[in-house]
Length: 354
Image 1 (cartoon, rainbow, N blue to C red):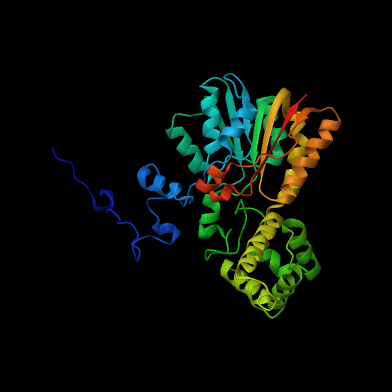
Image 2: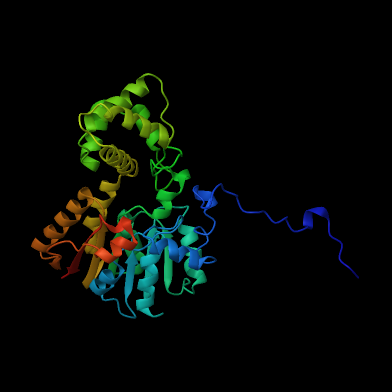
């Protein structure tokens, strides 16, 4: 007897991918090959070879150097404090060789399930990998479950898939909501922050969080527009205000204006996510979750982060808590920077628990 199907039971019609103008897709959603690296490995490889990061992906930085520093052995327990796309996590799992346990945490509720699914499809399930959505300032909570860690990695950079997705509002290069939150479900957006901030507070944020040399004119222009009732709700609107504020600065170049845009977005992102505060909490708690001889590797991407890591490591070295720390930061090789331009500003520091 044949089966009868109602209209609702029929399989949905195949939806064609979004079409784009020209020979190459420009918008995030049109980059269907980059957003499906498993299906278009050859196309993605060509993009990486040209020195670009495919949209929706993140290339892990200093992998070789990190693995050499952490000296991961089967049977150990470790923590990736910033899961992201899972590139570092995958390499650390390979070192464990199905023996031991790796914990991985991330504050981003949008990217975390995608990464978890990706790693599960590669064979890394809950028997060896425990993934949790939480801020790395809460490492004491995960250590209460896991016990002491033999190795810990923290990559403090924003992931490429967060930067490249216009809907997240992390970059002035793409039109999108002025949000900048790593977890868009909590706290307030950058747009909300700017609506209520005072001039001196904004200027301090630009200086402290990004060392912005043109903090004065940028802060004054932003506050002036807000007082006029001009809404700052998109990345493009903020970018235009910054450009207008700086075009009358003597001898300023287009490249310098671009860098000021980058620094302003960085400063607001750090403020919205309280990144320095949670980093300080993480660094303070870190020695207490490490096993004797445990190894730590931290990648930072700007001076404010690196100063905090360096200061913390030196403090605990003098106190005898760490037996050894990096004398100087390790920088990515020229070859890596060629393949991944986003690695250029990275600094890797390490410490070993006494």
